[in-house]
Length: 431
Ligand SMILES: Cc1cc2nc3c(=O)[nH]c(=O)nc-3n(C[C@H](O)[C@H](O)[C@H](O)COP(=O)(O)O)c2cc1C
Image (cartoon, rainbow, N blue to C red; front, side, top):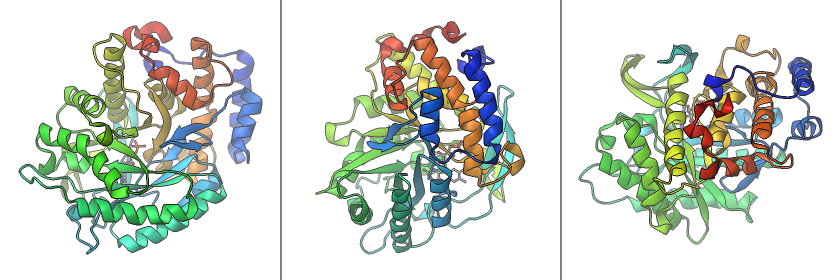
């Protein structure tokens, strides 16, 4: 698609020169009100929607090691990020029991390393052996509270992520007390800041889950995907909640990935149907080793290739009328290391883009040589004349004849329509 057929976005030469100038000019720092600048200079409305909340731009911090303390969140607010998903908390009941406690382990050592994808593309992956939040739930609630305050000051939504109990094979019961207690406590904090807005939450099914015995059978995974939303909603009562399922890459291949997405879209009772999807978490390699542990998660080019290919297959089947259309909003994640890759996710229906790895590269990888890594990454993600999002949005707008007043959410909604999935059938449409 964009990456394979086109080397350069096809846009008006004067806009291309403007992008090249801005890319140079903002090396010392992005404009304070970036969205206004982009609206005025390029007539692009960067706003979108995440979990039912308006976001000023579509780039967010994905849950993980870069969203587990308040200074990281404050910095992201100053750097102009659209939204932040906090590190995943492991659910517990009122007595503090955590059935998923094996995911609440402490690990600080991480290595950012180069990785080559199967197609030869170079990229980056983060190796570590940690998992979810490892401090107390009280500390997480305090952090959530501070993070909401920091986000509110700069118009940057901050949302929690949670790993709730998932029964193993043969374990019939769901630990609903963990769902109820954790969801309610998070909502109490949210209500203090945003009483008139519905809290989104991401339900994390992590890549390490893919490698665990819990996820060894496909029918168990389908059962989780089609049931957890209802349990979270029930736990939230009397409040409403927007549940986003962060779908993981299981170890069973692409056909099963498609089956997972189809099960979420087609097999959930209305109470169990999520409000949005996050697609898709990192790959799991049972042979990859790090720090004496065999079997770790990884990302890089293979991750985006796989995510984009699975989403393409789903959109193609929808286009051909072979499967019901999945209209759930998607927040794309997985090796989004350029605006071009973000545009690839957009073409498959994603309205926001969540990033972890690209926000932690060695400083020498970014053109901007001052400030935090979020700002440095955003300069590349927006303004790079060949790889940036602005260039590719201008390209897509021209190609599809999008009205200039459309924001990113409206562009994604266009891309959700099966009639517009022509690219899925004819790769060369974009060429
Ligand atoms: C070090 C590290 C820790 C992560 N921790 C979490 C987590 O706690 N919860 C979660 O949902 N995803 C977690 N992720 C996954 C990221 O949120 C993200 O979805 C994934 O890495 C794909 O994006 P990327 O290619 O930009 O890194 C983690 C990723 C990394 C690299």
